[in-house]
Length: 461
Image 1 (cartoon, rainbow, N blue to C red):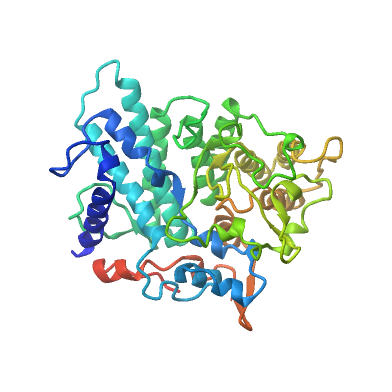
Image 2 (cartoon, helix red, strand yellow):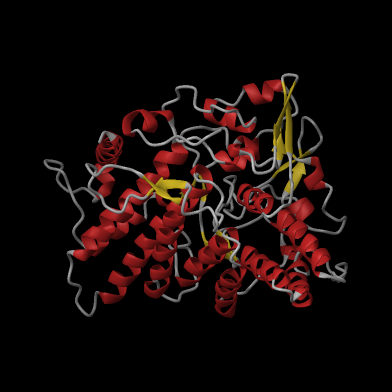
């Protein structure tokens, strides 16, 4: 019964820290609860509503530190330990943003949904009412999905009913006890949230409001979820629905290869929903983009062809080590982009076509994307003689197209569950660390504080 302490703490902290902006200069003489559509909109527009965790990205193996000093310089113990896939990663640390920030999103979504249930919108208000409700459902489904990728085992339909997933907070009442739902129940709930969101969100191409989801974003997220569930027919269906309405790709030949921040989030036609790694608790994630001693995995870098513009647009040489480092992201700044975009949706469509046996169509879909990524008149379209060859091609291109987008960790989990047999290795202070395929360390431990307060079952490591 003590799990309410954790959520009470979050609620009181959020309300005390954000009260002035929570409802925009309302009187502070009592606990304030949003009651109007504009209030709920402000709640969902908060900076923390479109962020994701960072532990998976740090663990995914797409970057490395060239020396022990660089690793030791990470100020956050949790992230330092995640880098080497340690059995215990928290070491008594209090700031656990991957968990608390995403459950903050769930809390705010629940406050919104409960508040909307008490309103009776007029005919003039119905559009905004539906949009905000769909937005809240999207936020909650997105948060549950990201939490599941960190704290729940990879989805396996034959085991999902028996494995522990995440706590599904479906109410704002912080006195309700938290328990872990099964993996099956976790995915059932987040899919229900996202599918309902698609019926409520408007059909709109985002502009400068890319932190707000619209119908295509919800469908793109459903395509991502179903891909990770290895339900390829469903993933294809949602990816195709997105691309019927939004399919404009950037031409990388028009993008500066010299700029450290080559993309503009407000004019990036590929971005369906803006999301980024949470960074305010620690600067270590910024080191992925800023530090001269954070280097791109050499195997990944060597995968790019000479005329592949992604090689010079996504990466640049470290001034210190003269080896490839990471440049700016689709966010248009130095924060890694983890949102939803058309390029990922095209890759989902291509992979699903190939896995269904239509490998020729899948390669054609892939070529349509890649011809926008190479120097003019240099791209030679792929061909494949069989399904296995086509699948290898599309998975290689997926890794090259989506580095540092919060996706590689999810891909490692699902691909190894399907027999990919990918092993990761790192050397720190003379010790070689290894993450073997399907290791229980692909599931992060629930924070020690939450285990202590709520008595939740801990993940095996």
